[in-house]
Length: 144
Image (cartoon, rainbow, N blue to C red; front, side, top):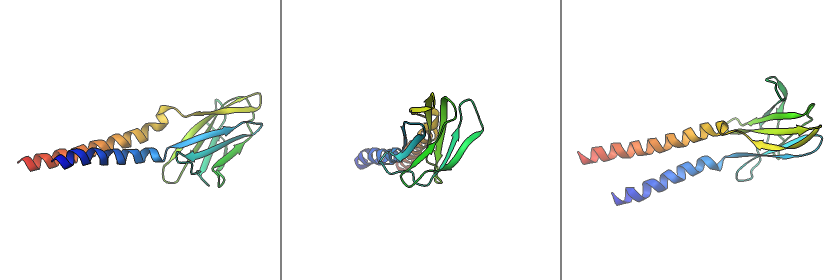
């Protein structure tokens, strides 16, 4: 019983910490062309992954393509405003960067909203509920 009290939280922590290991970050290089570099939290680039760029106040795709081997994607904005650059991998990772453009110059990427993180949060809560559910079933069977 003592072993489960100490091991179970450690296992839960390790499982949940793995969810953050593949957090995706975006970094923008400023200039006449906006270059967004996408990488996992450990620095590994999102190489050759799908990218969709959407212009300000538009739902139509402005540009689509793939990142290069270093996880970079460049586009030339046509107008000022907040451009949306979304990258997604085949296994479900991804993020949305908001690139603010003023007078034809990219000024930087802002991270996506908390809504972009919702699937990761829900998965972590699901793991925790599942682990504690298994422990509760095991304890109830052991008690009887």
